[in-house]
Length: 47
Length: 208
Image (tube, rainbow over all chains, first blue to last red; front, side, top):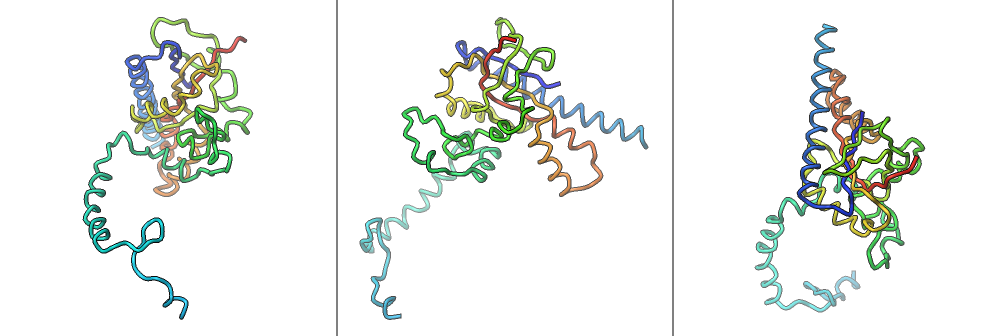
């Protein structure tokens, strides 16, 4: 499932935005890592 | 042949006047300094991979070249006047595009920064969409995007949205091309890449 992080435009500030960006980036990495891990496990099961 | 010989020889300035030897020497002397200046350009001010690709693929229409809007709101997102915007045209022709459709909390996980109330549904603004590789996205990319979409901030958008996407058509196509160039054995690799995309966009809340 995709995820959307929101920040109200009228309360836009760089500290919060930086945190949000870090979070989104970390999630993107974790998603990729878990997919690769899942793929490896599937491969080992097949083997 | 005669014509060629009749033409003036030498180096010329912007007005077509012959450059004096002293000026030529001065310009040659300045070259190393200019080169150093270019090489010292900060990483943050350089174009990202996504931006370079978009510039390469962009079409520079006359409307955008002659953009008279005082706020420089781009006429077409794919033109160089708005280099960071991506996938917008694809979104417009795609009826299932997430940029155009309402995203509600049953279909997508929505998280709000701070203590604000999470809206039931939002719609992303396709005019402001930018896609970056989640693995290599830099803070500088986000701040640059913010600078570029400044004119849009007061056009009815309530939220700034960062989307961690997992099934972007463009990403899938890139992955297929990339994987086919390296090996046919890594079947899971496309899935991994598919989950890396970050979308930046302005968004507005939608009443269902």
